[in-house]
Length: 203
Image 1 (cartoon, rainbow, N blue to C red):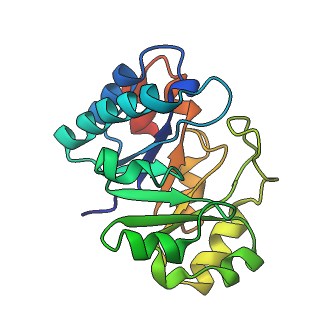
Image 2: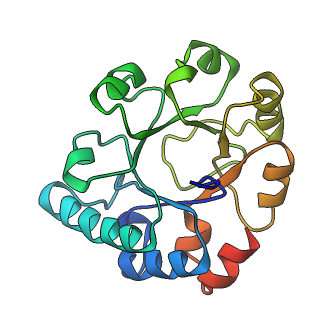
């Protein structure tokens, strides 16, 4: 799989003002390289409705051969036949997930040196580094850590795949890549775009 982190799109229905399937399809057509289903926070779906939406979005990624991740909802992994799981520092432990799902891609968010050093990096396939810039999409987002954080990880862990997260848009994506990231992950820059094709190309 070529660099699937390059244009990593994250979305749940709560991020959308129109049909999530339509948004995802447009983003796929425009060239995203991975998708993460993150149905979380105010206005998000629960239970069966969440699973049904997940299945429909999974199907779109399957057809396009794009890796499909879920955010933290480990119990959805078998239901949606996911390619990967992304977790934060306060979610289920990586070693437990790796044991249960030895073949899935695993991503872990890291926002400071302590988290990085205390994480079982040998068990993850990539880290989500950030928030690089201030973000309004997540209620519980930490303070922005800047491009220096990307560069620090790249310099100290040269072989570790890194995707920048938090506040990234078409105006600053290039700087994140230049700082050492393999890719950028975005939510609202795509879900709120009037021209998804243009937006994805500009990332």
